[in-house]
Length: 589
Image (cartoon, rainbow, N blue to C red):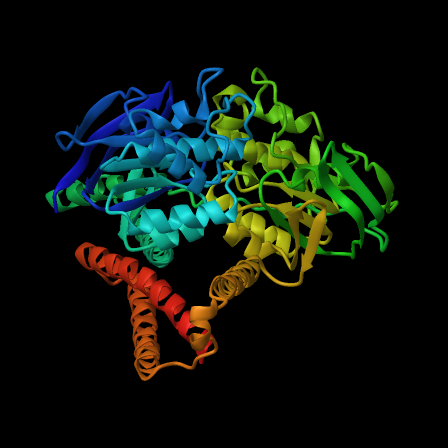
């Protein structure tokens, strides 16, 4: 397989903070690689280095000659006054640029980017990255602020494309369905696993188990050798010298203990009474834009609610009404006397960059209560959030964006809320933190309301959904996020089929010369065609299911992954095409 990029012996440090030390990675043409690591381990820094935006201490980075590279930054920016079409167009044809923007849900092509939302800006940046027609595409958190429709479109586009991809994302569904290899950045090294994210999780656990077993073996050997060293301190023979040297190597190996760091969110929640929030006849609008229209709801104890909907329909406004930051135009919100809100907002907490990390916590409390009744110091609590003693006494300005978000989450949970409000919590948090946050929410003795576009996160934490549909319409959907997506897709397909049937009926009303054909049955040829379509559909669906199982097995080599991914890209459009024809024929039968 032709090489796209080769990185050898890369070293990158900021003062005494070493992110990469001899980092090596190879990428072949056509590979789709997901790069994962904990916050602060250097994911975005590595992407910046590869894209030429960041310098490095030493090492070699070699690209294939004449390689076209396109880079989507995590937080794209343009000069004030830049028009949307100019921000994404570059050298691209203007018609193609408008088409791509429309596909991504950006309809105002000639407005300036200055006042656009984070989600709209990300869509413009994605359009620009794709329109550059790259051979090698680098994406840093592409789904932050994107709604599910655009995320799924991007997922389909990347899966079907033959371009080479290097992707950093917390979206585990995107990793699972797009990537052919996962590279984990840990201990300043790269651990590579061919296959999708699910396969990576299995192999990572095997590696951790093997490392744990090796360490136990080393510790047993160390105890035996230490006893021998104490009994024979003056040994002079060659064999004895060799054994002493081996003991020294073993001792050094045991000093390096791979930090199996894990966020541990066992913070105590305050008692919550039976009355929480009661909302009666709420109305809220901004000018002509209706957010709530005679909305009524009573929260139950320990309720876990997810809020979904397109950008700009009022999800964050609803959360701010719960916290009292926004007031309804009319209606009443009654709050229980025991209510203690913890609000994790999109904007985050404004830390003083000149403060030390521990200052942000001790400003709230010196000690924190835990679920089991124990109390711990602010420093101990920060260690549970992966902040080492050295990092705690470093300045907040030195933290990565993800580490600041983790610190922000820490300051919220340490206040023992019983009503937790999370507004896009998955943005900038690493996967390890998200997984433990999900476990914490599952056992949280209080209420949770979360807004998120992260499908995996919402599936795991929400018992039901508020679907904001716009114009003040809110539907209470009694199941998971994935179930809602499936229901929504089926509903839209039915509505489309019904609309097409109505259009055909209207356009095919017989004129005088056509009345003889009205209401006719299927011809023999059409019946035969319908039978052939049904047989082909059954065959294609079976093949698609088998291919998906094989792709998720993790047992395929790279060439087979590419081949089978390409075949699925051919099957899906064919299924859509012949299903539509079947619907047309079925209307006549």
